[in-house]
View 1 (cartoon, rainbow, N blue to C red):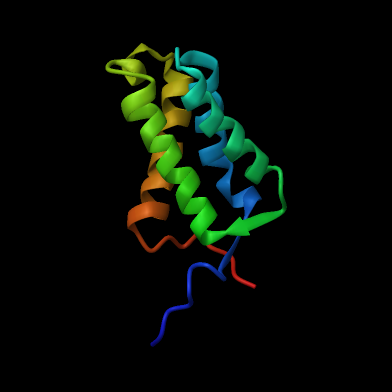
View 2: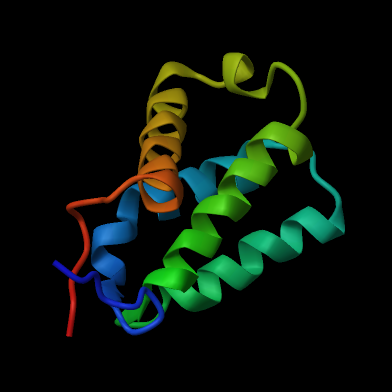
Length: 109
């Protein structure tokens, strides 16, 4: 069975809510520079649309990973209150699925 080109697969942004909430957690709690804050801004601009290409969703997943692992710094996750930590973890799981896995949360057109 041939897979669709990910460039043409569309993902409804409503299905990316865990990713969006995790970006919000990073934005509220992390001390990040302007370059990292621009990653959040770019992702929010895409998330405001009805749907995005799968390649764009994967890109946002990678941005979240970079923000948490490099931008927010060591111990960021552990410094969060439990609720925000859970939101961050859910967003990171979705990011991991988008970037590395064959996620069932895809819509296509």
